[in-house]
Length: 452
Image 1: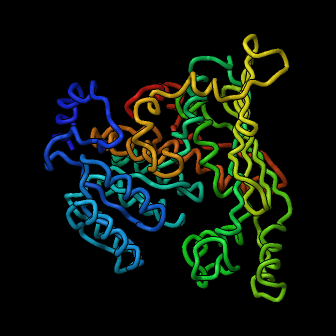
Image 2 (image 1 turned 30 degrees about the vertical axis):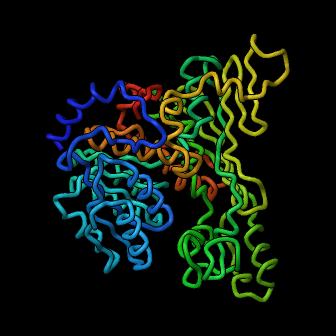
Image 3 (image 1 turned 180 degrees about the vertical axis):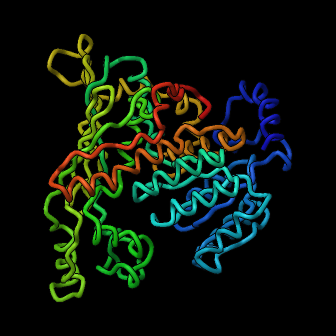
């Protein structure tokens, strides 16, 4: 990694003036194979394969190893690697813990973890202990203990961790972040966000088709229904907060001059998943007798040390169109994603919304201006390109990534804290200070740049 740092410094000047064309693979300006970042992928299911696809478009990486307990996913990954002209990687997956043998490989520089949630922290901890630059999918942790495990392991080993939150790179989100940093809305006061996504067709299937058919889950389901649905059965919590909270945390510099102070959460009754099972499998289906613990709509309010409030909504069990429900409000105006509207005092007509399009175009983020064409087709509207790019570029320099271990802990802590608050009738829960006081002096990450 030290030699790679020197290499990156030498190539930085050469790469600074290049303009990339849509048919040019990112990273192709880099040198020979000895300078390539050697990546390993733990978990090559649907999400892991998406990361693999984006990595295979780069010329500055090698795929050193892959790991998955599903032989079919290994076959798919190996074919993609071969079709892309890359050398065959080492393969692991004979048992649940075979990934530890992968982590012993000295040739692996960095690891991307895309496995079911209960494996995220233990794998990330093992990866950091093995000295690997580690990327972990969202959410990074399930309990407060796991949140501390991520932070403590990072501090003890010096290995970096990046939470792979792709929504932080969504085009409209980065444009609004640009507006916040340029003080378009004035001092920020209030935010809203969440995960509002009808996932009933993800939670249940027929064991043959991944999405949209049947009412099976667990051992009788396939894909995400094998593991994700059980969280809804057993936990009454916001189990998936980071898509909404990650972008808002960047806007208000959480862990870097600001921090989450406290949280209160409330949950509605649980009816949506039961009704879906009855409607699609009949009232006599065994799953119709289950009592799902998760409330259909969970609402959490977070208070920050700088005096902002953030309302976070989890709404995945009822019929509804997709929305992350963003609202960014300051003393001089606000943006709301639903309705695609903006109001800026003194520039908008009094008491009338502006369509957001022109504002978002005016403040389009430098990253999207530079790489927008390359990002096309990368997944999730292009934002997966940028999260992979940030990971690889940070790993090549072995420096703290834009979304680090402290962010992974703070954002993921919403799940256990919301669970505690709901159990105690909305009682406020104090956020741990995962930075141990260092948030006061940590400088905000420079999000407004065109590198990563």
